Amino acid sequence: MRKGFDSTMKVFVLMMFLASLCFVCSCKKSEPGAGSDGSGKTVKQTEPVKETYQEVSKPAGGDLEAIDLVLPKPMFVGTPQDTKVENLEKPLGRPRPPFLAPAGTKNVAESKAVSSSDEEPIIGEIEMITDGDKEAADGSYVELGPFVQYVTIDLEAEHDIYAIVVWHYHKQARVYYDVVVQVADDADFITNVKTIFNNDIDNSAGQGVGKDKHYTETNEGKLIDAKGVKGRYVRLYSQGNTSNDLNHYIEVAVYGKPVQ
Image (cartoon, rainbow, N blue to C red; front, side, top):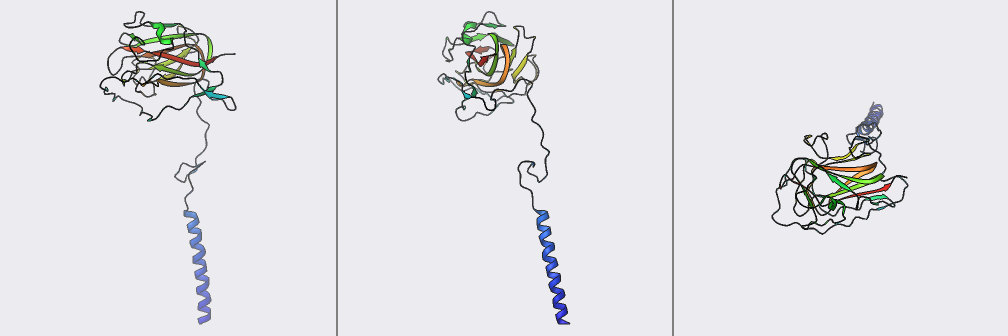
């Protein structure tokens, strides 16, 4: 009897050991990674959502190089303003990394013709917006009237545009409202209009509700990735700022290449 009992116990213990191994394996969580969302569930891979404009700013296998962007010196003056506005992006906390674009990309807006919704600026001349001067000193900026205002740059031919950099006014840490940047084939912005930046959260500028963030002006300017969009004309809107109701531009640079 004792021998038979011992044999039965050995079989029972072996079965319990095997059952415990199966239980441990079934309870092990899958590691987050490709095909998982971190919860152990398999996630179906989907195709990335493509932009509404041509996305070729960093083509695979192409020759890329940093654009030639020389920044003006920092020049904050006076008491910092309260720039706590809705949908404001956090400062990067370090210099902006170089922007890569196809070889041969340059500022194609410099010295090009500029027009404005305000034909008689309060301060400065419209031509100063593309004169290459990015400094914040007096005499280097244009002041337009209140309400929604825009400036339009004629690149004189269709270009592949990879980046647009705008300096509104970096003598103070201001935030400009309703900043909208568009590209089109015609000066009236009727044909092939593409919006590449829009932080107008309530459509007060009349160009649609935007999802881009407000940002604080610095000497780096605001660099907008245009993703190789094609167009001849570039238009920039704004509607006052955190210091006053006026609109300002120091410089607008458009980095691109003529369409071949």
